[in-house]
Length: 345
Ligand code: NAD
Ligand code: DAU
View 1 (cartoon, rainbow, N blue to C red):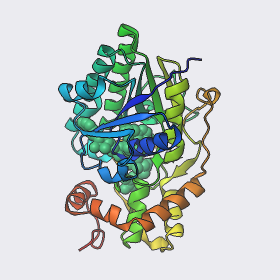
View 2 (view 1 turned 90 degrees about the vertical axis):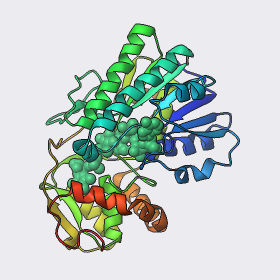
View 3 (view 1 turned 135 degrees about the vertical axis):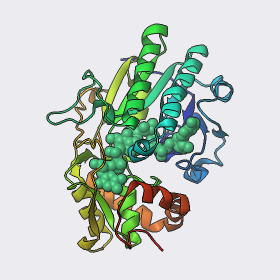
View 4 (view 1 turned 120 degrees about the vertical axis):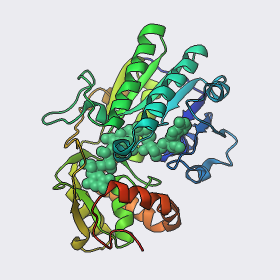
């Protein structure tokens, strides 16, 4: 098994939900590591998410777009590795308008791969997703299974993976891919189901459940996910992909029930709405490949939900700043035919 010694990382998309958790965890865990974050600061990214590390002398922040070759070159030339979190990440937004997804998730990844090739980086890690396998009716997806994405978002993530693989095969770039499952925890933008349902519950607004709410996801606590990415970065074998999941299959209704119970709100807040087009009803991962590298998930769904609800209760100002005018414009467009009272006055 190869072990990379990496002293300076370029973390793209490091001001978003999972990227910022990775930066906070790595700087706290590895006293010799330097981290530079390159982030465009879209609606999903914020320096607030990195407040804990901004005074750290081993940390630097650069605002920039991964599609901007000159900006990437400047940020990438002195690092040992790139860890690419930067993406448009919300499936529902990709169903409304996919252009930015193709630009950032595919073209941006290509710009980063070119930099990794030019500067002979020791590693390039692409943070991908279990959604590249598409809907999985039975069994569990293994890393060698064919990719069969079904949403514009997952199609762009699969496209990026194809480029990553091509740069490994054609140019010997030492690439790694992680395919993580649905991640949740503090600092997640309140458009994804768990933070949306928690913040709606705290606002006494309906929780919009797609279809009959039976679609399942394998929810993974964010600290577990970023520890897996760090494990693959240092111990993974270049050219390989690694599934990362907790093995917890939880339905949309079960998410709503857990949120309402933990927030002490009534079941009447559950609101069944029109299903998502092309909804993948199940993802499930086989995680045998990552285990010998020394990773397994530690936080159960129940414990993770307690920690997450508690964080949103204590950080009211953080999520209220994200649920302002633009958010409700998107919300009205995405959730058609909402009853009156589904949106704050
Ligand atoms: P997020 O939307 O919270 O954060 C994305 C970050 O990327 C933001 O800080 C944003 O400003 C930045 N960004 C967007 N476009 C950019 C560009 N062109 N140049 C530079 N920065 C840009 O996303 P997340 O949930 O933290 O996901 C991070 C990564 O993990 C994504 O690649 C996503 O596909 C993948 N992933 C997410 C999950 C999940 O459940 N959230 C699960 C598996 C994999
Ligand atoms: O599986 C990993 C993926 O998980 C990541 O790659 C994506 O970046 C991330 O957004 C997430 O995608 P999903 O589409 O699975 O997550 P989302 O939270 O949007 O939806 C989870 C489930 O909840 C899905 O079955 C749809 C349902 N849902 C979602 C929303 C937003 C609802 O029922 N109501 C909602 O309002």
